[in-house]
Image: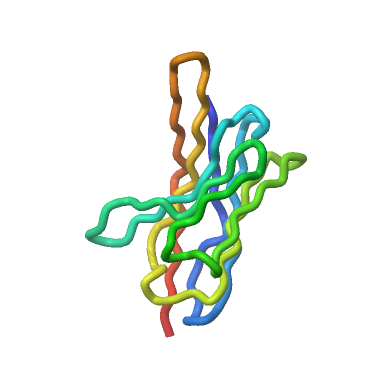
Length: 119
């Protein structure tokens, strides 16, 4: 069982920046893939960015060039640096972890943190 705790959300004006953090209860070197998803009111949850154990990243087209996912293995933490924020980035952001053991895949979610982009 992996527990994930997000922090760093809040209210920011358009064009501003926020940095989200996700602290994992396990050594993240043992987690195959970590990522951020978001869900806006009335919409489905969507992928924002992922990072694997080798540091390879994958970003949604809507955030390319603005958001950066990174990992701090020493602190078992994954960050999402969000720059040039837009009102359409408003959503609850969820941290996600995927652990593969043999043929089994386990997926874990954090409780979410609200990001509101508004003037």
